[in-house]
Image 1 (spheres, rainbow, N blue to C red):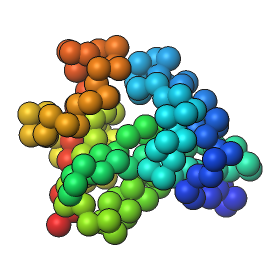
Image 2 (cartoon, rainbow, N blue to C red; image 1 turned 90 degrees about the vertical axis):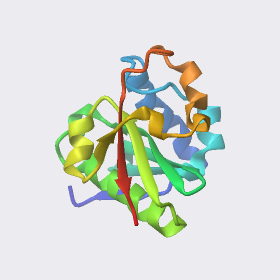
Image 3 (cartoon, helix red, strand yellow; image 1 turned 135 degrees about the horizontal axis):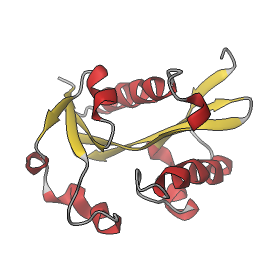
Length: 153
């Protein structure tokens, strides 16, 4: 996969990101995002592209010195090829560059993140403001995701 590229997206990438996220939102693994919502948070995203196709995406959202990984999605035909790992490593680098002290994720795939050094924690550790998007979740108010953190300092 030598022609694989990790980069920040442009406006023209928003529909491809939305399509990838929607695939998993329909299975209730990710929160759905409209193209408009993706455009509004485009600077949060990083994408993995191969042969002109967006094969993966993730977003890094800041809450002061606390950062969150959101919307990690990899096209199914690229699973287990390192795409998710590369995307998370890009988020970790960016979080460190921005000065975040802690990086967290809410996920249904905790083992993947544990392999990258994240540790499971209780959700009560986080400030209430991070739960703003939860009202859009089909599992709200009975969250079934696992919280994990990576201390960056």
